[in-house]
Length: 179
Image (cartoon, rainbow, N blue to C red; front, side, top):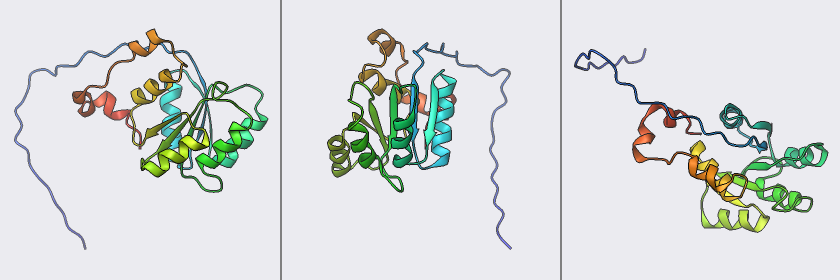
């Protein structure tokens, strides 16, 4: 059975569509980034967004795989994006193991989490994570945090367009919002 719903809108006709000017893409240095995220969709979206900006991305499904990847990689990573809650080995536990091998300067780690409770934030810091980004987030927010970690120069940080409240309801920025 089921239901069927509809609605009608009375909209005015327009002669032309006014396009907002496109912002020029900011040239950021290419980074080699490892993503540890158990949600396949999140991994795919983050990977695609960062690859579009020229970054080299590898991704794994949990903290255990991240520890293994880092132990066996021949080329160093510039950054690790680590989900906090994952099966087998969560982000903070994996970070503790990784910090035994890599200093904060060698491998900055950014925690990605929807849980911003004081307890979770303290656990991330105690484990050795450098920053925490709350999900969902904008790519521009991620770039600001990466800049704060010193992976981009000051001039590049300043060239990243600011996030305006109005931008959240326009297409380009809205499309870059991550789950």
